[in-house]
Length: 308
Image 1 (cartoon, rainbow, N blue to C red):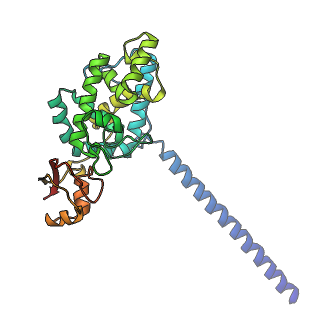
Image 2: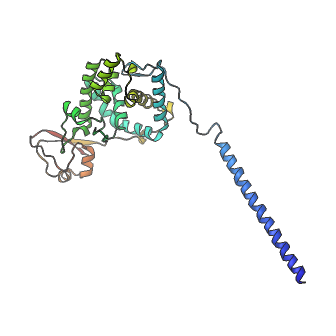
Image 3: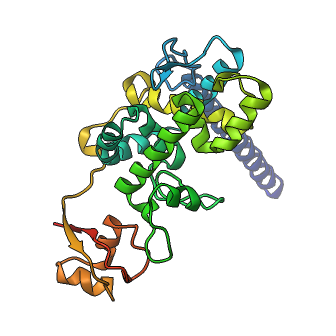
């Protein structure tokens, strides 16, 4: 009886081991088949694909045709269209912010006689954010301190009008108008906004050319105009590049009232409370106020936006 019992127990163990081994094989097989189905479904026509973009033949900047017949220019444009189309989150933020800030920028460009296309320069300079560059350029138009002051902006520790969108836009227009008069074209004026009037003029003279599309410059300068052109193309044709959104997805500047001030403000937080708002909301509408006070020793007239 003992031998028979041991045989039965041993046979049962063997049978169970075979069962579990087969079960594990079946599970692994099922997982593998599932992976194959998932992987193969990723190649179905209706799924997401990365596609090369067709470069439009009629690209222009400020009425000046982009010279796509030059191989290097065509490749630069292709690069910027690809980079900015497939960086979808950043491009969507462009759409949201342009809806908020272009209504401020566009009438000033028109008033100053500067082509409307320059609004896209502000997009590629700062993504329409009040940022600071490693070189110290600030605001949405990314102006350096010297250029800002030369074009009428007040810049100090207390007030920095590079953060004042309307005033900074006018200052940028003044810079561009002077650059256009000096260099001869709006395309070169845009390049000078990035590399400086002297820098662009020096390269043109040394290389004996008179066009942005013929000059050999640093990589960032060579990318500059193609980036602006790519931003214009994408933002002007959202559906063509696969972007979908509703108007209520876009950002807006809330309603506000302007308060004129020609005296010092010793405490902006207290000043805000007098107008039924707070420090944060007031500073968001007036980022050019850099401290919790307005010195104003000269009695200058400022306009401060107060949210309704």
